[in-house]
Image (tube, rainbow, N blue to C red):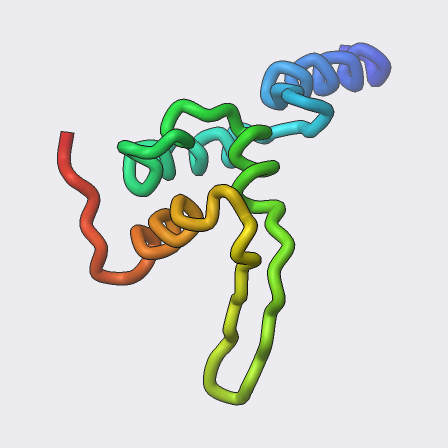
Length: 103
C-alpha cells in the first residue's frame, strides 16, 4: 500500500471502532465497560437501558462537595439532586463484597 492509502485505511478502521454518540466519541473499551456495568450494577434501575451519553450526563457529571482528610474522602451530594437515591444505590453496588445476581 502507498502511504496515503495506509493513512486512509487506518482512518476508516478508527471510524469503525469509535462510535459517535451525542458529540462524544466512545471507544470499544468504554462500550464494554458500560455493558458490564449494565449487567452488574445497573440492573433493575432506570439506567439499565440508558445510552452511554445519558448515563454520563445523569450519573457521572454530578456537582458535589468533595472533602479530603488524611484517612478518607467525603463526597456530599445535594439534597435536590433528583437521582440521588439511584446514585447511592449504584455506589453501594460498586463496593467490595457486592455480588451481582447471576443470569
